[in-house]
Length: 155
Image (cartoon, helix red, strand yellow):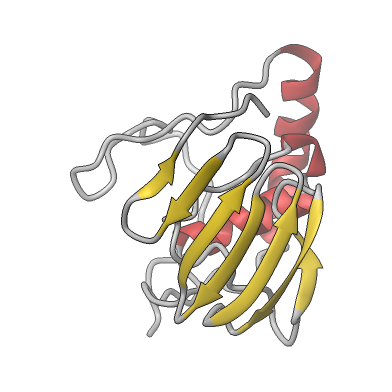
């Protein structure tokens, strides 16, 4: 399924609603650190292998794009929520990768099956692109369709 091309634009607010849902703030980065990330964005966007392809489930989709950006910009230290279907869809022919936060490793088969273990993410099991996990740092469980139950830990 060919969808809208990935593009960089200033025509739309970065925190606009998506299909009627309000955005979530995943990280707040400011100052020199934010400037370095902003400078790296054009090259990282250009490196996304699915710019002309979109599939809602299991990916590649907008969550796959966000995870790609995080993996290639480790200074983001971005852990995506367990309900972000598509976040485990890795680049072409890739089965093993760093977690999006850069603090662990994950194994994924076409975003459909896999396992992830990272300092910021905890431990997650992916079955049919639905994740269940535990976060020992926050004493939390993570459930598909529900999300995190327990304490949030500041990244």
